[in-house]
Image (cartoon, rainbow, N blue to C red):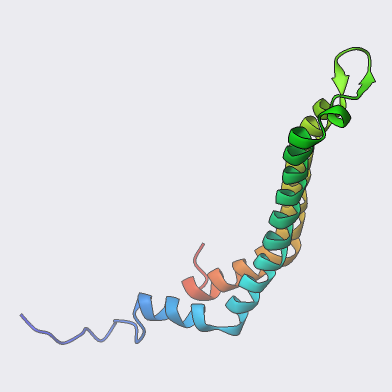
Length: 117
């Protein structure tokens, strides 16, 4: 059994190629772009949700204010808006990823795999 590497083996091993990509400026920019959307949106959603919870706990009269008919009040509208805001954030992320993240990620993957896939 020989310990020599075959002549057809690539000069960089797969882990080394992944580490090189991880250290690249392009990958750092990709991570920055992702964090630039995810962190502010997470904070905004958390604050919006916290407002809903705090108002439900401490402003019961306000949250109980009837808006339409006998069963639609501010609390119900705020609760439904939690679902709406979740879908809006998902839609915004999808648009953001299509424009800013996916093209760079596709380019990095293409370079990493040597044009495969």
